[in-house]
Image (cartoon, rainbow, N blue to C red):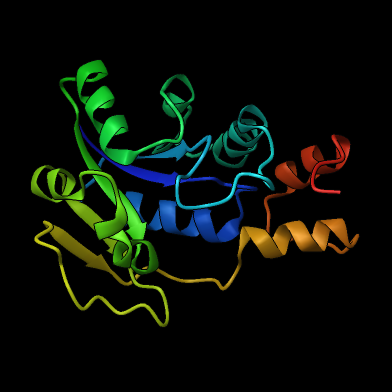
Length: 189
């Protein structure tokens, strides 16, 4: 089975994330997409992060009825901060019969040379990159690259958090079940 790994903080998961994951699951040669909730991205501050278990639960709520998507908390048991190369090595040991690929936006792809042991990643794993406006792919860094024109929504988790804090509605930006759980637990206030 070929599995695409879509890493993210998902703080919180929103419709933009879900559109990308669903598009990749149904419009590439990948069999499934796992949304890998990262406890701590080494390139982002962690001060605004909701607890990783709560973020994982929100991802599970968002994708519960979609058979080709799966939430993964595999990085929760790994050293922090989370480095993709270490996660991939661990997943290779834990799931030796699976083939893994990475899914990311062209904005993240531009930062690939800043990643720990990125040369190993590009040599050993295909990368599916969805285009993001203003972030053209000018260098492949030697990667086995598949560039995707997935539907894009200009939604950011940062904006979702700001709107929630300001008491504004995020309906249609975030799945209803996720909105309800966020409200019940007073997250992002």
